[in-house]
Image (cartoon, rainbow, N blue to C red):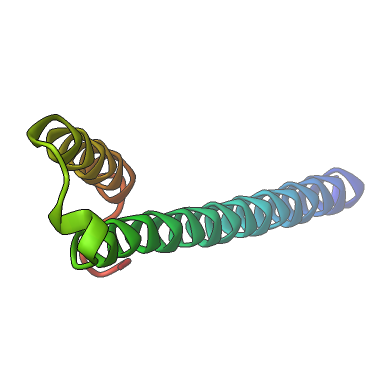
Amino acid sequence: MKIIIVFIVLITIAVASQQEGFDEIKSWRERIQFKQDYEKLQEMIQQVDHIIAYLDTEQGKNLTPKQYEELLNEITTIEEEIKVITSSYKEDDL
């Protein structure tokens, strides 16, 4: 009877350790995903900054309405991508 109890305790410890390992792996995956998302967001913000800086140049001020609209569409697309990425996080995560 004692052997069965010891065996059950050992199995319980092994399962708990395995679950702890799974939780740690999941935590690392979440951190990696957050880092990748953060880097992607930085890249997107840089793209928008470049567009805005271009609009402040002499060339940017002489755009045709169609070219200007294309740049605005690009900014809108980036904005939508940012919303998709950030929607998976709570405010506390960001």
